[in-house]
Structures are given as structure tokens and as C-alpha cells.
Length: 347
Image 1 (tube, rainbow, N blue to C red):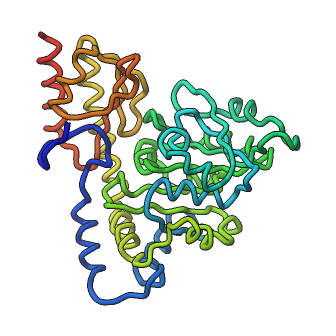
Image 2: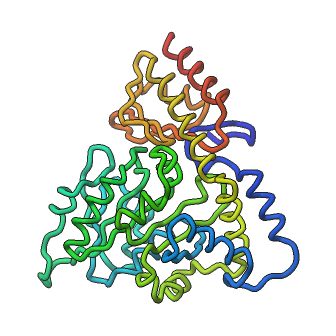
């Protein structure tokens, strides 16, 4: 199904447009000349703003996209014989076309989980073959916040994972494509969630939360950032006209737009889950904590319901689907979808 420009969908928060404030910031940044490769006023201001959220010791670097952020962040820690421990459902394992393994030269050690979340015990169990030359050496633990299942790690859970990882000499990476949604759900600062819990590096997502493109790699300890500018360039992630990424981040952090966008998307997901979960034949399969709703539905309803608003079929075998709300999802969008589903279930 290829929707027209006015058709609303719950397929992905990538489907939404850019927030008007972001567009205005881009128009403002488009005036006149500016130095290239990040030596501009917008990048300087955006980096300073990120320090205010993550701490003065943090160092941030802007890249084009989420895969680029994840890959370069991992490259900063890994050698070709190293490995990353991650959930089986992790984006770096499922949806990045082998890019992490290609660019790092290393291996992904995947762990099955019920809800997309690693635990200290799961991490501990995956740390094997240390010092054995026949085995890839565990070097990084990567978690996703919020997870690919829309679940959210509490700060204490992140801290516990970091404690185990650091005890074994491993770094902690967070894929934060939807980190803003997690912060909105938890109601705590980014520093409390990440800096204070021992995270080493974060991929901070902007694209899913009101930006056109652009992510940030944020190192919580500047020692880990040493040489990263070369890693970024080597991976083709250094933007010459970086002001167009930086200006978007500046707008996103201005007046807490990042948090308001995420909180709204989360609210719409709760509304969607409540309405759909009340219908016969719909089973919500995961806790709805961010802006994703997972459900099992009657397989005969999938295609007709997609005509109301498109969405992603997560698991063909079990008819589990994913509905994702965005910063621009409206109550009317959600109510129309629920009503469409109600009519179909009454047939």
C-alpha cells in the first residue's frame, strides 16, 4: 500500500514529517555562508546544549542516520576480533544489513529476550571465551532504549547492566533511536538515565522525533571520544554542511521540544493500546511504555485494517503487528483507527 500525502499511518515514526520548528531552524540556517565540517555557530551551540543535558564531560558528534551512529559508536571501542552482546531483536542485529559487522570487523553475540531487554544475568551468560584465541572477545554490551518492543529500561536496570559490563572490561552502548520516548516515560533527565548509570556511548536519535535526518553520537567520558573524528570521516558520516544537522538539534532541544514531541507520541500510543486492547480478538503482547504498540490480531483483519492506516506486520507466523505513533499523530488518527477496527471485528 502506497498512501497519499494526507494518509496517516502507524507503520513507523519515520513516516512522519519534520516539526515546524525544525523547518524554521533549517530556513534560518540556510542564510549566508558558514564554515564547513562542523566549524559553524549552529554546531557549537548544539554541542553546548548537549553538554547541558549529559554533563560537561560529554562529547557529541553529529552524523547522518541511526545506522551510522550505531556503527561509528561501536567502531570507537572495537577491534576486528571483538564482539558486541545485544538482544536478538536489536536493530544492529536485525535491521542494519550487517553494517556493524562490516565496519567493525567484529561479531554480534545475540541473546533471546522476552521483551527486548537484556538483564545482568543474560549479559553475564554471554561473556564466554575470554582470552581464548579461537573466540571473538566480548567488548561491548549494546542495549536499545526504548527497545524494539517499545519497552523501557529503568535507570536501575541500566546501571546494573553497566556494572556487570564494566566488571568484565566491556563498554556500554545505548542505541537511542527512541531515547526521548524513554525519557518522557520515565520522567527523569537524560543525565540521570545515562550519564549517572555508567553508559559509555549513546546514539541519540532525532529522526524519529521531529527531525528530517540526523543523529548524534554522545560519549559520556571524553577519553572514549579520542580519535572519533577520524572514525566518523572514515565511515562516510562527516557532513560538510553540518549546520543543517546541528540546527535541527538546536531546535529539538529548544524549549524542550524533544521531550514534548516524545511525550505526545507516548500518550497517543497509550490511547491506541487502550482502545484496541478492548476489542475482541486483539491481544496486546508487550507493555506499552513508549510509542510502540504490539498486538496479535486475527490474520484476516490485517489487510483490511491496513486500509484504515498502514502498519507493520511484525511476525507473520503469529499475526503479531506493530503500531507506532509519532509526534504528529492526533487523537483523531487514533480514534479513526480504533473505530475502523471495531467495524471489522463486528463482521
